[in-house]
Image 1 (cartoon, rainbow, N blue to C red):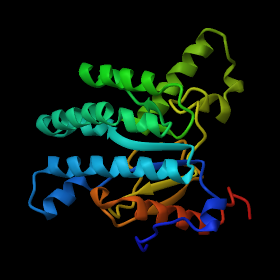
Image 2: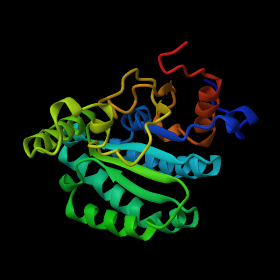
Image 3: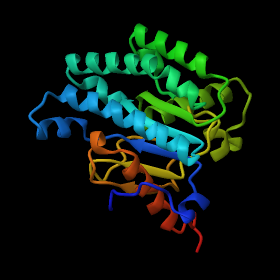
Length: 245
């Protein structure tokens, strides 16, 4: 994949994905290649988030979901997790004015209650300040895991069966979808993964059944507007059949 697409072609503009999801991978490797501490990779990764959010809004994407912190990430060294949380809170505060200027609405999916209190407070402030915006909806997947999400949905449905609100025979894809974190959003049309790794890492397992996958070798801190636009161009060249011919 070439990484020099400053402008979207007419084709790409005409078949834009409604919802783009991104697995932001490679911060650690980026830092290691430069003999820097891992946290430097995360710091530079924040700049990529800023750029890609801006580019998605400019392109006219309606939903952008970023895999910011997985349930598995809690197993990383405490120092690294603490630093990531500080960066997250700082980003939510420092970007507020620009997000608002660009009419971005912010929402979250995941086990938000597991985040440190100062992050939860800042999230709440930023989300409520941007709540009435009608441009891009930026969805941060925080303390998120695809299997955890499905387990929680199954538990909720089991509770409803127990209470007699739903019959087991009535459980279908729509019912399951209505109990997922993402019930208010369409499924992603395009899933981008950076750093060349060929796996989905427990991200939106139910929702990406028919998503187009684009894997780019760029490490996340090097992934900017040209790489994002190239992924949209690649998506435009695909023929989506949804299991048909």
